[in-house]
Length: 218
Image 1 (tube, helix red, strand yellow):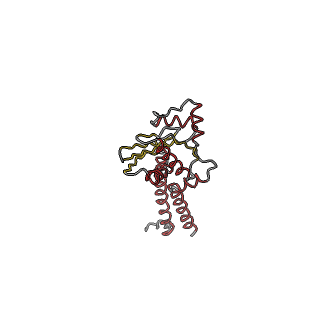
Image 2 (cartoon, helix red, strand yellow):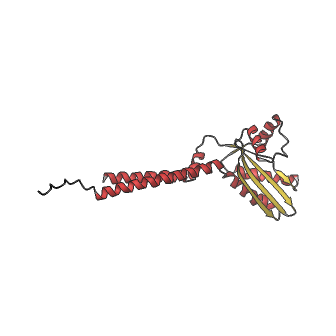
Image 3 (tube, helix red, strand yellow):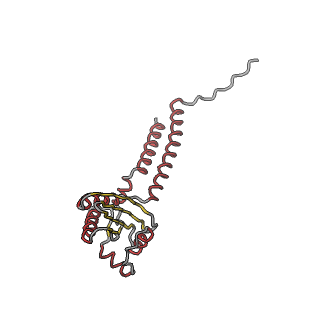
């Protein structure tokens, strides 16, 4: 009976470990208890075909949507421009590649940089959103969204939705590492279940004691 109880406890522990390794809530919970939120910066928007007022409204609405979450601390524009001015990096019009954006992030001392480009051709708006890792220059998130029609829906729905998606971006290295961990957990679980099932079989059936060989008949 004791052996069966130990077996059940072992199975429960292995299943629980495999679940929490894979379950995304583990990362969220850890982040929520972090003493300091990661700092991110939002680059000046790359704008084509829109007025300066429209550009300002888009950036303002995006920052508002981004600040509604609690996953990041967003560097203020005043702080960002102050640091970039000291580093003589105020001309960012051509800084649209991931390595350049990452360099800006390193100068600012932030973990990630959010980059948005908006292009208008007639009634068609194309919005591209990227999240760049400052340390590795990796593109953690990259998506395009097209909107045809009036300008207002960009403010009320398109940009807020993209801001939400960008907040949830995970690093590529974590995604790859997570699946290695999950695969390892599955292998360990399968091996453990095999040996546990053999132990249960032996416990249920019992072992047949060795019988002495009968004396030969003379």
